[in-house]
Length: 130
Image (cartoon, rainbow, N blue to C red; front, side, top):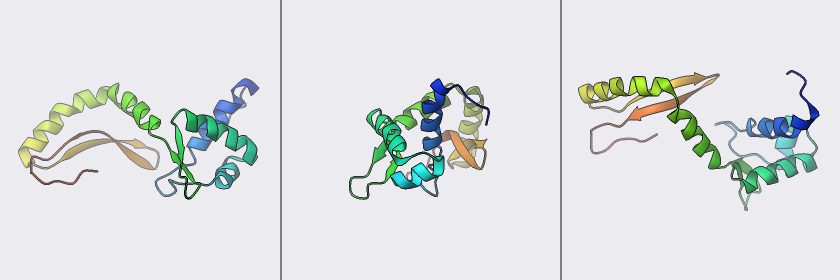
């Protein structure tokens, strides 16, 4: 990674913390997070507290583990709403759904994962929602 200005280091560290969470590891302890981003637990704790206060992270009171907050969902929705390929693909999704009466989605590749940018639900009265 390119060397950054020290004024931006806290932001860089906060983003590294967010990147620790995966589908396989959606909940992490403070010590796990600190180890993963190579920070002192006290530094990680301050960054996490700020992100928690702003809704980017949340803490389970019973397990004391952290997970991503719902504010990230809001930001993701904003990102997806500006996605041009979504508006282009939507009429085709509706056409496919109408033709086959099944749910249809379009995904974009995000490194090892895929992200659904649009979905048209099935016309069946009972269907699975992912």
